[in-house]
Structures are given as structure tokens and as C-alpha cells.
Image (cartoon, rainbow, N blue to C red; front, top):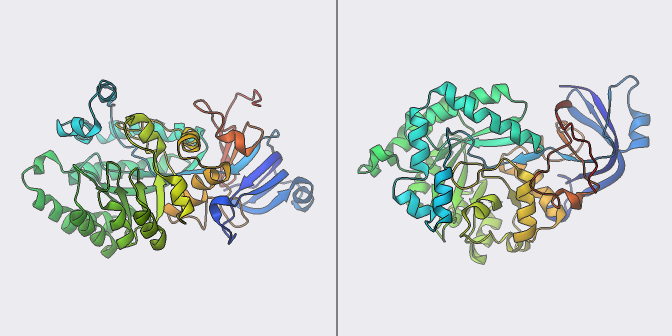
Length: 419
């Protein structure tokens, strides 16, 4: 926790959680702004002359160098715990094989599961930890991390314990999710046994040992059926855990309707989504998490209909889907660019999708996701002239500086101006 006055901000842009207007279109812009953070929380925000006059004498000052200020970004869907890579599969897809064909041949998630099984806990942490730092340099101050490459309980527990340890070492807010991802190869002819084991043993152990705040399930062709997924999510709720659903990535799997039925906090992927499914999710208050980097990387799927989701009243979040198989990136700004181009989202919608709406996915929007008094002093400074430029520059854009709870946790040495 720290005290700091961040001044000389050319433009401050933030969603407002108290604003009753359509949040996807609501961004407060304050030119020539300053932010006062005391004991790690925002205590004053507004025009620089007014905030400076009201600030306590002697408080440390940070010169923002005329940069854009936004809330720290929130990456609400990642798979960061793995060893090695799946670069060979990337090139197999480019040569014509599909994601599902590679998975059916024993690749995909099973490849990562084999590598994780053979890795020591120390290796798993050592290889996974740098991904969080790279995410931090892209302005991410809060990040969700899923298990899911362990598959059986030994591997899943190893993954969740690695996430717990990484959470102690990084400055970011880390939210852990137990992902029921695929059937382990050791259960290939005992599917019902695995489903029962997850419900009767794994989920209760995750809750009892506080290894995760949420349960996610891959409700999709080649993974789990709607009925199996419903049973998993019911068990999660019965054990006090919140629910997420990987839904409709490869077709109308029924996962979107299931997410609405169980009142899941969020539904993720959603490449295939009808108006009926969108209306059901909107009525349930389920946030739609779109993952444009995954579509970009796989190369043969439609982009989620985010424009239609917004028109029909859904809150939309954007995340990286950081994972070795279908989205090997830590750059949330790149995902904003992809969503601008292919999902036709506006600069205001993009900012909301990686801040306040993403914080809703993690049930943390009362503490993070916007620059408002009383919230955590998480700020990203950007060496760009305006909000529109945040998604205009792509591929190499990093934050100029990142604050978490008022402390500088990242600073880019490259101060060359962007225009």
C-alpha cells in the first residue's frame, strides 16, 4: 500500500461503476487530470489544479509525463500454468489440420497434460511465472488463472498449488479458477467414474482447501456434455464456488443456454451465438467473455458477435485466453485491437471490456476495474495521445507505467513519444 499523487496526466479515461447509463458506452474523460492515492486506495480524482490544491502537503508525486491514464487492465480468462509449448501443432493447423482433429489424435490439451504430469512443481512455477510479468508490462493489474492441464486430481492440485505460490510472488491481483477441461486419458473407458470423481471429490477438495474461487467447465464437442457440465456446475454452487462456462466455441454446444440456466457469472468464447442465446444470457446477467486472440490464432472460426451482444443488452468482456494451444499471447492490448477490427467495438466499449466488465467476471468490480474514489489504486499509464490510440497501436504496445495499490510495479524505459 502506498501514497502517491499521479499528476501531469494528459487525459484520464475510466468507466464509472455508479453510472446508470449503458456502461459499454459510458467512459468518463478528464483532460489535464491527477489521481490521489492514499494507503493504496483512490481518495481523489479530477482536474490537476483542483486535486493538487486538495492534496496533503509532502505527499510523494509521480509525473505522468503527459500520458493517458486508465484503470489497470483486468485479464479475466487465462490458462497460464503449463510447461513447454505446442508450436508444432500451430504449424499443423497452418498445414490444414483443425484443432479438433489434432485433439482427436491425442494432441491438444492431452499434450499439455502429459508435459505437466512429468514436470516438477518447481519447473511448473519457473516456466509459468514469466507469463505474469509479461502480462503486467501490458498494463494488466488483475488476472484470472485457470488450472485445466492437469486433468486428473494429482495434476489439477499441482496446478492450483502452483497458482497459489505464484500469487504470493507477483504484484498483480490473482484470481484462481478450477477448470474441468477434458477427460484424462487414464479415464478414457471410465467416463462416468471421472464425472463422479470430479463431483464427489475434486470440487469439494478445491472448496475445502480454498484452492480456487471459481469452477469453469469446457462444455463442447470433444470435452463435456451439457448434462455433465450441469452436474459439475451444480456441485460447484453447492460448495460455495462461482460458475463459469467455456461455451459455443466450435458450434451451438448448448453451453450458452446452460450458462444462462445456472446463472453463471460468465460465459466464455461464444464464437457461435444466436439472438435467442444472447437474450437468455443477457436476462441472466451473465457477462460474455470474447477471446479474439484465440480466433486469430486458430484461423478457422468466426469472431464472436460482440456487436450483437452489446445491442441486445449483454455486458461484454475481452480477455487474452493465454494458453499454449490456441492463444499464445500475454497482450491484452492486442486483443483490444482484434476486437476493434473484427467485432466492431468502439474505443469506449473496448475500455469497459478490459476493465470494469472484466472485473465483474471476477466478482471484483467493487474494488477494481475503474478509477473511482474508494477503489484500489490500480492505474496504467500509456504513452499514447488519446483513448482511440490505445487500440490503434498494436503488436508492441506496453504500458508506460503500472501502479498497483499506489505502488509503481512496472515502468517502461522507452519514453519515445507515439502520435
